[in-house]
Structure formats: C-alpha cells, structure tokens
Image (cartoon, rainbow, N blue to C red; front, side, top):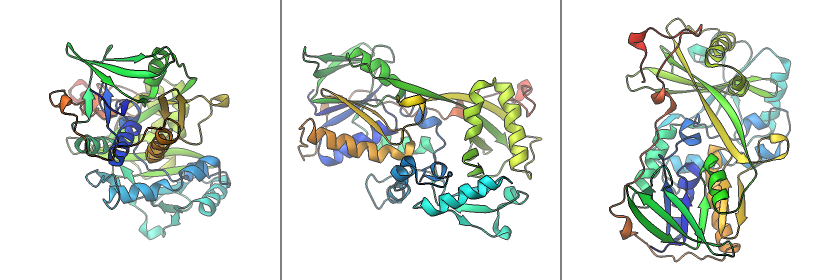
Length: 411
C-alpha cells in the first residue's frame, strides 16, 4: 500500500494529527501496537488547561501564553461547531472550581492568574458554593476550563477514523525500512502472522515513551525525558467534582471525577500530590492523600471511601534540568517527525505544526481527494485503552489497609 504519511502511536497527538491530515486531503494511516490512548492519554485527568497553573507566580509565562487559547478551540470542537467534531465526547464538567489555602501567597497567585489568563477565574458567592466547598476558608472561584472523559474522547476519534486505524502485534509489530540516506521508505506491519508493507513519504512518531525505541530503530536517537507521576484514586460516596486547590504558586491538589460502571463516583487526585508521591509507596501515598483531602476539603467524609494508586510517566523532549517543556515539541530528522504534545490540551497545536512541517520542510502536498485504504478492510482496529480505575485489583482504606476480600475487585 502507498500513503503519504504513517503515524505510529494512537494517543491524542496521533489521533488528532491523523484527523487533521485526512481533512486536508493527505493519505494517512495510524498504527498502534496496544490500545488507543494506552499510557498517558487515557490516564490523564481530562482537563483542557488554559494556563492557570502556569500563571500562579503572577506573570505570563511562556507555557501560559502558549496554552491560553486552547480552551476556546477545544470548546468549539466539543460543541460540534468546529472540526474535528467531537460532540459525542462525554463532558464531565464545563468548568472547574478553584479554592485556596489560607496562605497569602495563594491570593497573590490567583490575582496573577486573573490578570494574565484568556479564560479568567470568576469568584462565586459563598451561598453558591457546592456542598463539598462550604467549609473551605478563603475565596472560591469558577474557571471555564472543560473536563472531559479521556476514554470517551478516544472512542469519538476511533469512530471518526474507522478504517484508517491499524492494530499490529504488540511485540515487533512495526519495522521501519530506510535508505542509506536515512530516509524512511516504508513501514512493515505485522498482525497475527500477516505482514504488510506500507510505502510512505513521511513518518510521524507519536508513541509517547515508545518514541525512544522507534527513534533508536530508525537510527535517530533523541534525548527524551520521563517525568513521573504517582496518581491516587478514591471511590465511594463522593460527589461529582472537578477542581484545583491553590497553594502559593503551585496546584496543591487537582480533583477530577467520573462514574464507575456500578454507578459510584471515582476521583482522580493529581497536582503537587502526584508529583511528590513518586517518592512514596502506595500505602504511604494513600495515607498522605487522605490527609490532604481532609485538610483542603474539611467537609469531606472518608469513612466509606476506598483508595488505589497508579504510576504514569510523562514522556517529553528533554529540556534543561528536566523541567516541563513550554509547548509541543516536534523534531525532524529526514522525513521522520517525532512529536511530544506535552499536554492533552496541546494536541490541536501539535497537529497544525506537523501539517505545516510536511508541506514546508518536506514539501509533501495534500492530494485534496477523498481516499479510502481498501487494503485495510480486513485488518483489525485497535480498541480503546481501559481507564486507570478499571485496572485496579486491590483497593485500600484511608489508613492504607487493603479492603476486605469481598470488596477487592476491579471496577
């Protein structure tokens, strides 16, 4: 089969890029050796950030300036008025709550955010606070950053892109073939004993942590960094709630919520809690998370709440001192483009830049005609990866003790 572009990796960057290129008229396909969104995308909290956490020092940082247009762009797509039409995506909430600790630095940080953000936090009267925030000290704000279900977003893209997504074997399902000049000429795909050679003009590597192995295979080793997180899950009689607790120039705690299959609510706990938790064992982190919830949300009752944790690495282009990059990172070597979106919200920007590099740097023009890869009609498509709480085998009480066996099950 002959195509313009092969995209390797079915996370949000790869999927958005495939959709974008197809709408421009490129003959493009995407290959995935596990499941769509496996790793970073499905494990994310689903917040379409607009720069709040990067403006808490009271200045418009490079990160905040780069990302502050994203909520409006995503909102148009999620409402169906712009392409890609993502209106079938489940929205957890159309806004987040912000609340502060007693620290004066929190108030200063919030002022900086109000001055610099395109989507600004709005203070809400005490009588309009949700029950979970009734006993918190200080001000409470609403920020119009949407929170979506990553699994639902992936399902939406899978439906839109059916026929252009290829599942390959997990081990050695993809091989890159290249000329002596280093140009990649084709990608060999393997699935259940079958093999197909896809001739291409360019390859986009969007496999997250897998980019390192793919780049090495093609002789283009890139300096990549992994910044780990140790996330906490909490399930039980909890309200649907999305918000950030601001402590000085940091997001002390970020809470997002979804429903389990049995109708209960599950919370994902991120922010500084997850960054500092990388040094803790699961039982230690659970005790710490329970203490943080009690301190930052005094109205919460944890008596019937069960906890679990999961670890995830954020794969990024290496930067000085291992800090977070300010924007999507795309490196070109020959006709291979390696990309790291940095944040879920940056996926559209990533796709736009890849498209521009194909046309300007690689001089690959879109054909402009509708194209259907008939050769793929009988190839399997990758499924959507399971949400992190679906993989939990053991849940714990707030003191870090395993829940009795009859309740120890995946949700």
